[in-house]
Each structure stands twice: as C-alpha cells, then as structure tokens.
Length: 93
Image (cartoon, rainbow, N blue to C red; front, top):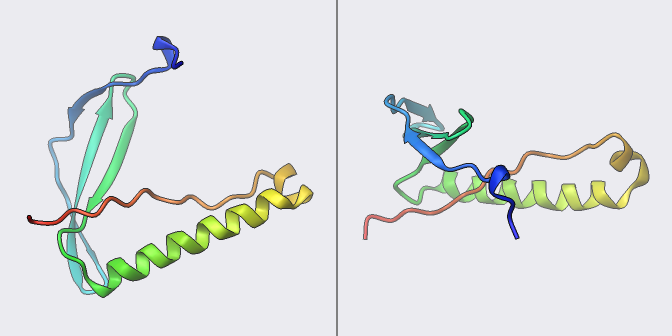
C-alpha cells in the first residue's frame, strides 16, 4: 500500500511547450509539475520514424546493462546504472 504522504499528484502542465530538434525531425516536450514542485519532462513523438525505433533499441540496451551492473558487486557498491526513460507510443488514431 502506498503511503499518502509519499504520493505526488499532478498539479499542472507547464505553459511552455518547446520544440526539440533531433535527428532531422522535430518533437514537442511537455512538462508535468507535481504537487511537490517536481518537474517531469516528456518528449512527444507523433510518428513512428526510424529514430524512434533506434531509441527503443538503445533503451533495451540500457536495461540489459543495468541488469549486468546489478549482478556485479563493485558496480552495485558504486550505484552504477543508466537512466532509462519511459517511452509510451502515441498514434494519431
């Protein structure tokens, strides 16, 4: 069960929606602001491009590397890990 004092609720969505240019295409970045003031950024990719597929493969590689880090004593001691962003596909349908 989740403790109510550790729950962060969505307070608002950031007013600015910047355009991020990457690999020859443009994406929008949304900012969600929590009730504790923390900000979470999301990159909106509206089309399934080859760069989106390569991003998914890189995230899979990071997860495999994190599992390898967890198996080794020295890397656990140093708290080594890759940040793996959460990717949620969005289609126009």
